[in-house]
Every structure is written in C-alpha cells, then in structure tokens.
Length: 416
Image 1 (cartoon, rainbow, N blue to C red):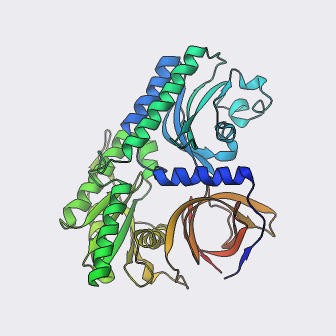
Image 2 (tube, rainbow, N blue to C red):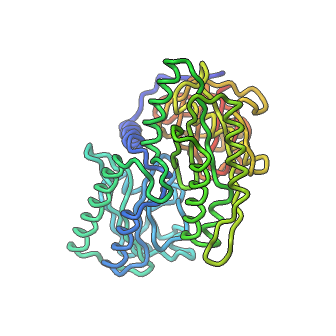
Image 3 (cartoon, rainbow, N blue to C red):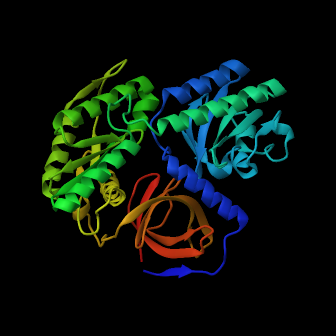
C-alpha cells in the first residue's frame, strides 16, 4: 500500500465543503427510496407557480441526486453540470429569469439542447447548523419573473422539505415494503453485532439488489416498480426467521442480518431467497414480469465486526454477482484475488480518481473508508482503469487503488 500525505492545509472552501458533506452524511438520505412527502412538495411547486419542473435534491461531492422530481426523466446529474451547484457554492438562493441571457448558463447543454431550460429558481436546503445540503427548485422552459411573493412561497416550501427530512430521521419502517429504514436497520444491526461479539456466536449479512430495476420503472412505470419491490420484500420476509433483520437500504437494495448464522448457512439462505424471487411472476398493469436479484454475503470475523464493514463486503460481493451475469449469490470469502481488507467506517468525502498519468480526473464521493480500502460512488464507472490514484480533497491524502468489484456507479477498492 502506498499512501502519500502532504502538509498542505485545506482552504476555507474545502473545509466548508467537508463540513457540508459531514452534515449530509449524518442525515443518511442519499439514494433512499421515494417518499410521498417530497413528491407532494414537487407537485405543489408545479401547481403554485404554473411551471413544468419541480425538484427536491441533495448534492454530494460528485452529483445532484433528486430525492423527488416531477418534469424531468433523469434521477441525477453530474454536479459540475447542474445549475444547483451554484446554490451550494453561494449558500443562498439563485434566480434566473432567462438562462439564454445569463453568461453562466447561456451555453449550457440544458439550455441549448432538448431540455430547453429557461427559468430557474433554486433555494437552499439548510440544516439547523447552516449547512447547505441540497436545493428545492422551480424550473420552466419559458422565461419567467419571480415576484417577491413567489420567492417567499418557494422559501417556505424549502423549509417544509427540511422539516420532512428531520421527520424522516425518526422513521423506523419503509411504508412501501414494510422493511426497516436504512437508519433503523443499521441501529438494530449494531445491537445484534454487539451481542454476537459478546457471546461469540455467528452472524451473517446479505445484501440483495433487484436486477435491471431501472428498466422496470422506465418500461412499465413506477406503479409496477412498486409492485416488484413489494413482491420481493414479501418473498424475503416469508423465508426469514422472526428474529432476522430485514431492511430497505435504497431504491431496489435490501439488506438482511442473520443472527446465530454461519457464512455457509447464510449462503444457503441467500440461495433460497434468490430461487424464490426468480420463481415468481409479478403482476404489472400490462403484463406479468419475471424478476431476478443478485445477492452478496459476508460474515462476522476478526476484521468484519461492525455493520459498515459487513455491508461493504456484502456490497462488493453483490457487485461481483452482477458483473458475472446477475441472478446469483456470491460470498465475500469466495471472490477471486487478494481482497482481504480491514474495517470500514461510513463517511461522505469529496474525492478524485486520477489516472492516465494524472491527465484524467473523475470526481467521486467516498462513502466508506478504512485503513486499506474504500467504497466510492461515481456518476459512471465506464472507462475507469483497474488501478488508479485516489485523492481526498482538502486532506492532502493520496493512495494507489485496485478495483475489487464495481457496478455502473459504485466501486469497491483496496489500497496498494
């Protein structure tokens, strides 16, 4: 492993960004499932202002992710391409009556291309400590002037969105699938892991991701996608024991904790779940759908003795399952190559992937970090070489990395 640490101190902007990302990490909302409260806010934005697009978004180190969106087809955009990055930088509202007449945006692809964006009003989502974690936006394809009353209303809607964020911190159950929320799942998993370590009994973790779920939503609609999620959840819960933990970590990703269960026993459970999911047909509006899932398994060990490390290992195994054909189970311990990595902690840090003799740079968000490994998210992993240099912005940290496993937007890497 080669790590270089420089004496250079972080700039004020880098320190402010690090604090902002830490506040966003504390909320643990990125990539969480759709929520009716936020969907209602974006519908209100469109109705009140008679515009085409409403957004509630969160912005990490490399992307703007839409917690709720009405009027646009995408789920996220690169941070560097978003109008909202200026709201993050300025930490105050941004209003553009006509983007074609604003030098910052006149040549932007969203303005010159098919999206035909003209009007933009973005208000910051601010935590109680003053950190801007995202935006609430009103956007239109026609120029528009926002009166003071309009600004006041959008500011109030941003406040309502922040109230909803704080309310979700106490939610324990995902209303659609009846699984635990991500935060509740991790809290309960911590308790089971502590008991397992104290009494020296086995414990295993399974991460499950529905294959080609985006295609289901794009082709058959969100209502059918919701039926798929409910069916997969019901299948899992029917197989699991009463004392097992089952949670929904993200849109189509679920996790399971099996107490008093060895790695080998967990593989049997995972295979039973995989087979049951692939054997059922989910009824959609127009047709019945066959669904499959990819599963990754990890187990408690001297190294993996906390929920973040177990999830990181199971994630890597699940990405490996997807890379090798989907609809299969892979155990972390059975993955090829030298992938022995240590404990991880959950973080949210701004990183850069450097390759091609440092001539090529891709922004990334570091989502988990250990002494010898990390989990990264990128907008698109295509074109990233098997080995590269990872730098953490503002911390003077660089290390060479080797990819252990990946999917389109996630990388699990070991430091070299």
